Every structure is written in structure tokens, then in C-alpha cells.
Length: 326
Ligand code: HPA
Ligand code: ZN
Image 1 (cartoon, rainbow, N blue to C red):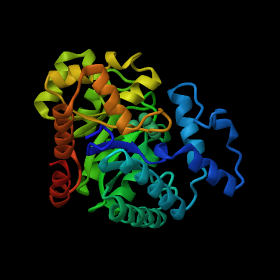
Image 2: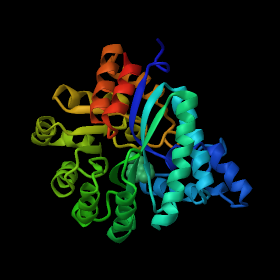
Image 3: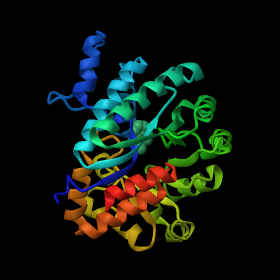
């Protein structure tokens, strides 16, 4: 079986960040919005560094203005993911972008996304679940509004709550109230940390937000006691190596710590983060892991089983996915 056909699980994908540039350009044209500044001549997204990437991301997102736009986005993203063998995907969705955190408007966006996901599941066999995500640089008050939307719509499809955005702004404890609200609503928890922040940012996410997964978390490698804590506590890392290499967290694939973390007993999974922004796909992630660390079928199988165990979906859904991995 080729690497692209291998069945894959992806636990860390920003929905708007997965939008193909041509899709965003098409919407911009329909709505007469000038987005030429965010594209390079070759049609790819143009940004200088992580913080600029976040502003380009938000500019691209500004043309997604209705539930119907989000339904079309889900359709486009899942078609692409399925073509790379993804059988199960968890995507970050933000009420800040979908109705401005008004619960009624959020429900409409959510239903449109779920309908599109149901159609994609029927057509391509790919299963999607959503993790409501607050945005760190939008501040704690907006995070509370997102957590309220998450708590109101927690269920089979909205399975988790998380935090993304600029790790340089605010502290995890500023968001503890929102995470408590989400936890009380039965949602599973994850937080971006240890990508731009060092090991302390991972400790803060664990101690202050009490998450069971960390988005990235790779810079834990700078503190081996923390690495051992992650291993002992069974914390799963949503590792996005291509994102880290493209953004310069690590200069080269073979210097990425994913293999060292795994060898020391940490549960690692593999995701793309924002694939067109970082010129990656799940197939490319697998190809680079094969090239850099000699990973083969047994390694990829182990990664998929780790992702399945850490997935936020219910047990019936897990049983369905397990069959696809046999
Ligand atoms: N990291 C943090 N925040 C984000 C990202 C990301 O890759 N994409 C969109 N928001
Ligand atoms: Zn991310």
C-alpha cells in the first residue's frame, strides 16, 4: 500500500487553515473582497513569520461569512483529506469566526458544517469531529463566549474544547474559567503549547487548564523531567512536524524531536495543522517521517493506534475507525 493510501487519523487541523488558496480566492471574487495582498504570485499564501501567518489566516477567514460558506469549506477540506487516506479527523472550529460567538448563530454554522461532514462521510468514508477553539490573542472574555457556545453544543459532534492563536499573549491561567466551563459540559480538552513557548508553557497548560492532549508540545524536549511527566501521565501530543519545520521552530526534518519524544515513551500523533499554509499534506508528513527517521508500516500503525486511543469521539465511532485500520 502506498503512503497516500495508508489509513490515517488526524487530530490537529484548523478548519480555516485547511482552506485551499483557490477556494479562498474564489470566495473573495464572489464577494468582491480584495485579498491579493495575502497571496504570492504562484497562488500560495504569503506570510513572513508566525505572527504574520496568524493575520493572513484571519484575512483569509474574513471571506467566510455564512453557514453555507463553512459547509462548502468542510466539503473542500474533507475531499482533500480523504484523498490522502485520512479516515478520521478532528478539526478546530472557532465561534469567533462563525457568528461572532452568538449561540444562535453558532448553532446555524454548526448544523451546516455537520450536514456537510455527513455528506462527506457518506461519499468518502471520512469521519469528522469538531473541537471548539478559543483564540488566545482575542483574550479571555471572547474565550468565555466561545466556551459558552461549546458547552451549549457539546455532544456527538462537538467533542472537545481548546485554545489556539499567539502563544506569546496572555497566560493559560487567564483561560482557566473557560476550560472549567467546557470540562463541566463533558468536553475533552487540548491546548496549543510548547510550539513557541518553551517547556514552562506545556507545564502551564497541564497545571492550569488540566488538558489531556497538547497541540504541538514538542519543545517539552528541552526539559527531560517534563518529557518523563508527559510519558507517565499519558498525555498525547498532537505533533505537526511539517508546520514546525516550515515556520522554523526546527531547521530541518531530521532535527525534529518527534522520534526522541516517542523513544522516551511519550504518546505522539501526526497532523498537518494548516496544510496549504505549510505546503504539506498527511501524505507529505508520512513521506518526510519515512525519509528522516526510517518510519515504516509498523511505526505508522502505532501512530494511528495512539491517535485512535486519544481521539475525542465516542466508543462506537472508535470501533468503526478501528475496522478501517485492520
Ligand atoms: N497555531 C496556532 N494558532 C493557530 C494556528 C496554528 O497553527 N492556525 C490557526 N490558528
Ligand atoms: Zn495548530
